[in-house]
Length: 145
Image (cartoon, rainbow, N blue to C red; front, side, top):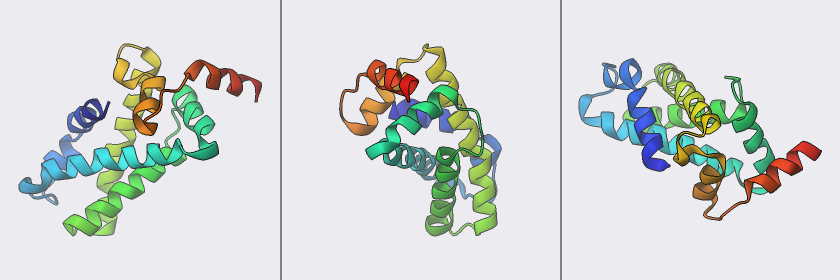
């Protein structure tokens, strides 16, 4: 899943990162890693505690760009761009907004399609938590709630 996410980031990084003069060429690969890790960190945090149901809802009914998972990932990545690469806050936020939402939307799309096992909802949760989760039980709980 992590490698597949990195490839999604890389495939969507055109103007936001790869062709962006604000990001020196020598840092572009590291910036892509930071974008991927920002998404992973936010998703991992969402799988903790009572937030797992919201995580599942996001992947089942996702599509809103103002979703807390997307905005959290955008902010985390923008902060990394500012802190580690010296990119001004407004520019960092612009770069993050250009890259993160399309990547996360593509993750949702692939999760729903079932074509990519790396992005199957149960697989994502298992990779993020390190535990094997029976997604069917969680989905039934959601239907009841």
